[in-house]
Length: 509
Ligand SMILES: [Zn+2]
Ligand SMILES: [Zn+2]
Ligand SMILES: [Zn+2]
Ligand SMILES: [Zn+2]
Image 1 (cartoon, rainbow, N blue to C red):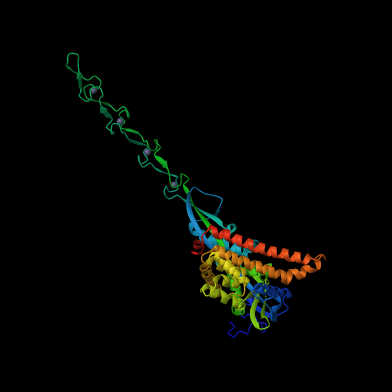
Image 2 (cartoon, rainbow, N blue to C red; image 1 turned 30 degrees about the horizontal axis):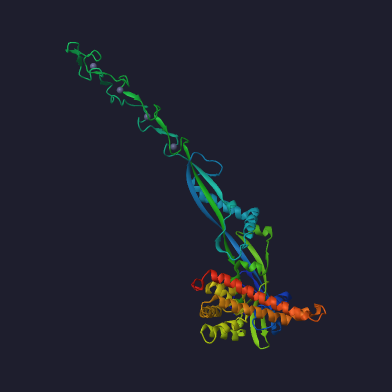
């Protein structure tokens, strides 16, 4: 392993020394100029409405590099066996000599899978069809039912000694059992004399019973003095079907082998510059949307020699160290990473350029001065207005999320939390009057739109206006009406939702 200290990222091409396959390169290169434009656009979007104009934004340094590395998702086969017994000789699964041979058969099967190019290709395709394309999976089991296999072993039934039947437990194989009527005596009490041996005659004289000839007993009517009857359990057969094997004399042990690949993702973490590595970890499998990624298809003959299944990815990521300059004095560094030109590691510059507005919001939150006018002043900044609106409408918790989405750069998490808290307090101080907030913010919107008209709309419109004396005047009036209308609309929309729930319930969370 390479123990030498790392060169700063991008200084010189680096080669990973760990595994040959995982080598990493970082080199200066002409990266897509579109990325620089995208970076600039993001900055312009961030400062929009926050006290600066697009002209105030400049990029003073832009250092493009390409990070090129190999990632490998290695797939090892995991096998899980589950067995169950079933009566009879079950067919349709792969037959093995006995239940002890399952593991060996499964091992053979996995060996076959790894060495079959078609199956390997199929496994790879299945993994690549996942949304994550197999990227960044560590120890993840990927269920692939087409790899599952059934085995069966046939065993002679030991309950019946592989005969399929057992001696009748009632008659012990004789097929006959003692007569239940006479209890094997062969005779029963004479029903005519009831065993008294005589009956009452015509003159009340005792007469010998004619039926039993004065013995009191007659031959058993069920067994006819045989003392035995056919066994009622086995119907005189003497044997019964073995319940263990249902008479098949054999049982089957079924074994389902769930063979599934487990993915292990590898990149050479030692040779990838730390700042880039951090972003890779952040993006996870989404790196596929932020890079030029190619799945490397190995030569088939080469594949045959290998003892594993792996998917190598060749990943190229553009990155750049960018320096923005705001108003020719505020330097803002950023790390551009990926084909979407996402900007990372930026200081919370919005908190800086909105300074005066934040002061006003803070004063409003602390009840210093006229809260309403302070809130209105703070609302001149787009982001602060978003914070005020989102906080009053959705409560602080949800507002945090909304603001982070609307302002992906320039705000720190901590700073946003503080601002939302201030907004929350200031709104509370407005006398719990939703009408107040709506009117204030409505007016701000109207003022903003009107200002936009004067600054941008009107100059753009002038050449198209008809040359009538009062055309300009009419355009101004229309713009004013539109601006007021928009402000009124916003106020109304807000009022509606605020009235629905009371402010208290809105803010309690
Ligand atoms: Zn049996
Ligand atoms: Zn029997
Ligand atoms: Zn009798
Ligand atoms: Zn009998």
